[in-house]
Image (cartoon, rainbow, N blue to C red; front, side, top):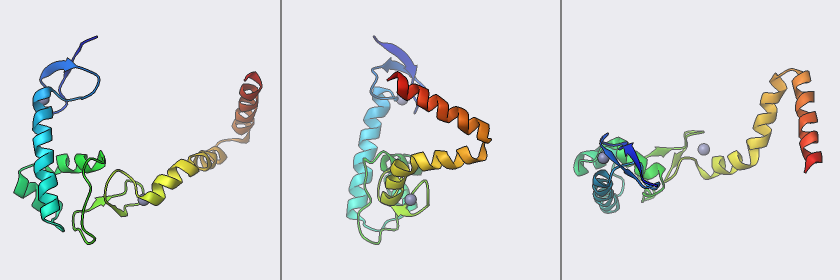
Amino acid sequence: MAEIRNCKECGRLFQYTGISKICPRCQKKDEEDFKVVREYIYENEGATLTEVSEETGVDEDKILRFLREGRLEIVGENSALILECERCGKPIRTGRFCDACAHELQAGLKSGFEKVDRLKSNVDKQKEKMYTAERKKRR
Ligand SMILES: [Zn+2]
Ligand SMILES: [Zn+2]
């Protein structure tokens, strides 16, 4: 089923296919920008985000988006192009979190919730335990 949506990039209406949130025109531009940025980064190891943006004419936000999406990876050991882990602020090369945080987030998601639980009243905790037990029984 075709759906008409507003392009996230330019706001124009386009036929949403369920894949991209931007119109085909912006998508094409996006691809071109991506190629230019990627090439620039590979040829200029250590370039800062501002430099890359100025030299390629691509918005810093867009470059960051490429990195966050994991499409683009920072090359070079001492690259000044820094992407920060959204959790601890440690420099990372691609994606949203550093390896340690990504691991912790997966493993520690449960313990994180437990900490929040402790702040709640004990009654709440009891209820939750019972509810979980109920659910387990039903399975
Ligand atoms: Zn568009
Ligand atoms: Zn981190």
